[in-house]
Image (cartoon, rainbow, N blue to C red):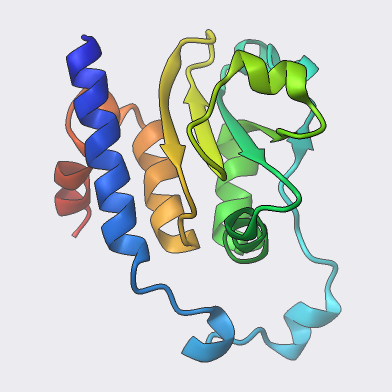
Length: 168
């Protein structure tokens, strides 16, 4: 089972890397917000504190545990580009208990979850069993695919590449 988990993690990491290499910020790709959406109050991810991690079990939702640091460039990019995308915000709020942990300020939590780098996103089943960890920056469209892959339990049936092939 450990070998399958390692293969899954490696496959997921490689796929994310390949998909995010050609990242173009929204301002450069012509995806600007309309005047109507600028005047509305923006949606945000409903982050909760780590001490409420048991909400996953209570609400029957998987847990997304996001590790970052204030000095981390790619963490800032993830916050600015991925976690501000409306589709990502809505999907996380509807399907996950989202916990954001500053590794420098919440060292006790960070010690329980030794991430290999920052940013790092960990996923847990509602019962607290770890699914996987996703190291590094992931742009919003790829992150949304990963969220759906995790939320639908597709990780139990196929690797991420197979999942993406089915989505075409």
